[in-house]
Image 1: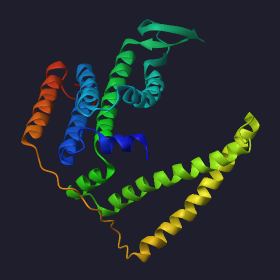
Image 2: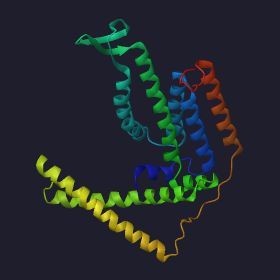
Image 3: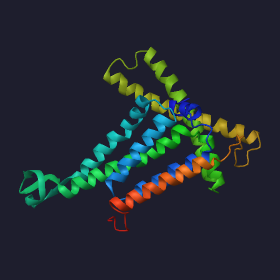
Image 4: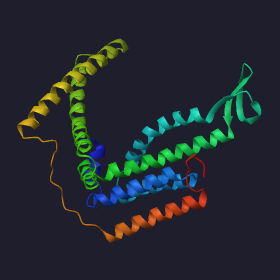
Length: 265
């Protein structure tokens, strides 16, 4: 089991109604994406980090490690926005001239990159809150309540369950290769990785056929039914979620408004 799933089943919010956690994450995510102010994105990022670490009891080191993974991709992504190429050198805060053109950073590009970085980080923090506090079984039950098409839910369920099969298979193949010095050099490492990918695809296809046969033998009709634990709605939690999200909406309107169709407040 992945550590994310371990924390999802053992955190302090595990007995909270999944609809409450799902609504809090999704509504906050929508507010963060619609808001055009940097302050709102910062508040959402810090808010979700505080709830996950202080309220749910997720270790800070593990949470920061999770956040560092998308953060590295975001930094590379926003660099392409911050850096521009133009023939007008006067609009650049810093630049390098190349064949009569200037490659550098403009004030507008830097502001857009910073806003996009924190907006994306805030959205990621909302998704991390949901995944670290709510098991996949509960998320699927919420999607069923929302009348999401059963085909989408079943594909989501099967893919999620099959992730663990792929991880276990890849781990066994890797251990077998390592015991035979398959990663002793760069050349053998590339060869071993290619063999691992090939074997993983073959075993995955074989296991998927076995899984389908097993499901059909148990009268599978396109829906996997699982037992759901009863949860009670908490008026206190609902009021707290409404208060927090209403405060975020007011903050977004006060500090910069919301994005229009053209992307400007």
